[in-house]
Image (cartoon, rainbow, N blue to C red; front, side, top):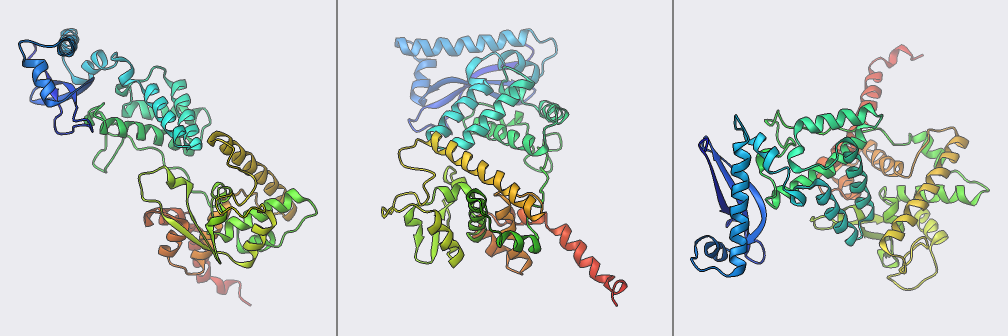
Length: 412
């Protein structure tokens, strides 16, 4: 049959926790082998009985019949291909295998897991991503996700006015979905579409989002820091931005999740929300509590001696994760609206809460503080992340340094 071998295969090298192994259909063509996982999982002993025992139990017969049916289906697909290629076979055989190969199903499972782990914001990102992918092509399967598909999706998004940052964010979720599919042997590594190393020239690399400078200049920082208003909402926006700036550029969501026991004398010790749902060991971040920071905390903290109580009253223990996420987002949205009002008053560029983090790191860098210290203060697990984080400010420094070379032209 076109010199193509179709056989069942048990992946005994990667047993699951219950010692069951994934059963695949193996195709061999011109000495090249490819594996197509099924929904069937058996131990090595069970597989041996299913395939070789003369007297099978009803359950073993059922597994045997499923495997034989898949082999027949694979052979039928091969017969329909005049000039065989693995890609053509996958379109016929893999694409119609149903829920196992459904990208939508994979996203739904991921979103459910994220919500169960109270990662509501991340779950929302995944939901937005699959909604966007679905507008480009419906009923996506793993086989559909090729470098050509990804290039087409990127063009589709940019043609509709979406930024590279949005495209990159959505495709990062898709890359995670595919990474997990490879780890679970749901897809073969050979069809993985994303570039993993420089030699993968035919693979796809997501667009690099613009690393925009979001730091206040020293002059504008001084204006903002000394700002005071007769309006409570504007003062609150100023205070929480300054608090974030003074606490190592602390993320606003992390600030709202602080509890009384995070304060240890003149230190604040906490773990970033962004890393709480990852496999990495959470890094404890320490920030010095200067008088101005303590004043702001005292101004807005709720009177509660319980060490486990939230420091600020925006959130409480009775809320579920989804409610906490909504309350946090609403609070941050209001802060950002008021920050814009302040900036217009002061005649400085519009800022958001996130500018506090960038301003913190930039002020330290310009003061000669080591990248290693800044990395630890920001809570980055890899110093490369910090270097990339700070790189967007290099151009400004290059221009300023070069200006010194011809400063004599304006002297005197």
